[in-house]
Image (cartoon, rainbow, N blue to C red; front, top):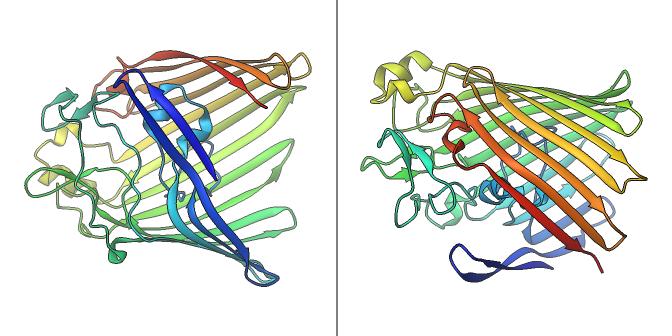
Amino acid sequence: LKADGRYEAIDNEWSLDIRALTWAKSMGANTDLRLGRQVLTWGTGDLVFLNDLFPKDFVSFFSGRDDEYLKAPGNALRLTHYNDAINVDFVWTPTFEPDLYLTGERFSFFSPLAGGNVAPIPPLSADEPGHSLSNGEFALRLFKTVEGSEYVLYAYRGFFKQPNALTPSLEATFAPLGAYGASLRRSLGPGLFNAEFSFYDSLDDGTGDDPLIPNSQLRFLLGYEWEAKPNFTVGFQYYLERTLDHDRLIANSPFPEFEPDELRSLVTNRLTYRAGMDSFKYALFSFRSPNDRDFYLRPQFTYRYSDSWYFDIGGNLFGGDKVDTFFGQLQDASNAYLRIRFHY
């Protein structure tokens, strides 16, 4: 059991968030079962997710809460089986668990219908799939490590995690999704190399000509991390997203000027330096999209006063040339934070 109590001055409300309420049991020598509310994660990306289609909390992430809160909890059954041939991870989420997306309550967001940023009152509440077992989510991971290299295959069937589709009445909703991918992680030279691929199959728009439903996509990721100097770690990632049937999307879209490019790239960089026997940590994580011409910077300084007291100072800095890109829509939402943590 893990729970967070929280008071938020914005809406003057107290809340209780159950992040974990899980029952675990060994089903024999090689099989484990976990049932209940839990935070799930897999894939090789560093803050970039391809085959990890478990819910994320972008509102907390952009607000300066600890990185662990980017992963939102969900109610699921997870079955893991280990054997010499291949290991199997299976996750069943009985009812759809979306991301905690931007609603206008904390951050405004870009709306192509309005042609600019909006913060609706009441906040956006997308039309979710019905809470029935037929609208559940299934995720499968087959993984094996051979001579230090980790090979993984992924499959998913459910819905896009963001409300990036519209109903015929132009209400935001979630489109059905099938995703299939693979990843590799291994040591290379002085560091760790990772590669990941995923095919996003938009199940209700196989031809790509329905402007109300997102097109299918191919997604690629390459990453490398190494210790450049003692206590100084550097990580780079290159992410590429290709929208399939892009010509049909543009030809049928009522807002072609706001549709994504056929190829969208993203470059990330993580820099971490530790000093004073790990009492001080200086970190910077940056996102930059060359074709969207937008960016997101996450500087952070951590001071460990003792084994019990930690202090964090950091920020979320957004910018971009256009308001209709993912980070560009948040260019007026940059913020700074101070966190004080006490462990006992």
